Amino acid sequence: MHVNGVSHHLLDLSQFENERELDPLTWQEAFQCYLSWIADVGDEPSVKRWTTHFTTLAKDEAIRKNFRAILEFDIETRQNYALRPHQHDEAEWSHRLQKKKYATLQDELFRHSQQLRSSLVDRPSNVAASSRFKPYHKEPSTKQQPKKEDAEHSSFRDSKPAKSTDPMCIICGRTGHRFSACSEETSTKGAQTFMKYADGNLCRRSNNSQLCIGYNLNNPRRPCKRDHSEQHLCSFCGRAEHGALSRSCL
Picture (cartoon, rainbow, N blue to C red):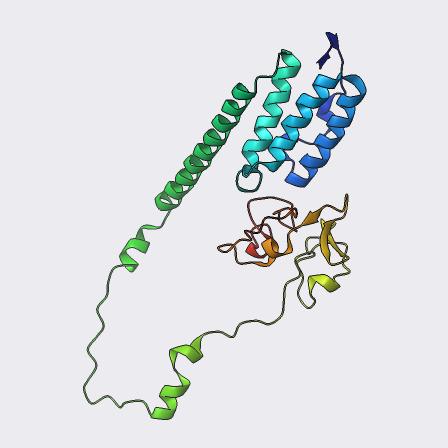
């Protein structure tokens, strides 16, 4: 990286995990470390420029709905500056960010359509035949009608499965206890849990940053819309695309 015309050589990044696979929480921890390094080797304009860069991205609505665009934009911005140091242009910066958001969404839609097309192509030919309409056979008019007692026991309402009252813990993924009483340190997959419950809050183990409990407990179709500081991230994996009870990452 170039600071004040001086080249600073960093470590060989090949020894670390792929930066493009960071989850939102780890990314925020990483950029805090990056800002600390800039403060040590850079000047005041550099610190101000990169602080504005990261804090603006962290507050962007896309960090919950389209984190991949935020992450890729951040990586490309830092790489471009390291290769060719240049004066910050806010309008150009915002234009590139919006362009990255659009391109990422287009890519997601394209991959989804390709997967849907593949599933239709791979569907067995007998599925179409079996899905054709088959009329009911006429029953003899003398068929005995069910007794009233039998009809009551076979009603549609009674045929629905009973809703389970055994909650799933949004910290470890197990059942049998509520997350507020969870003492597990590993998930059902054997990995260390991301979160813990402390002082009435759902907190990340590494830095005690708070996650929104309502976002992880609510139906995915009715997400939390409150304006608060708690992050809307999955308490199992830390991703912004879903809450814990969507079970998308289990």
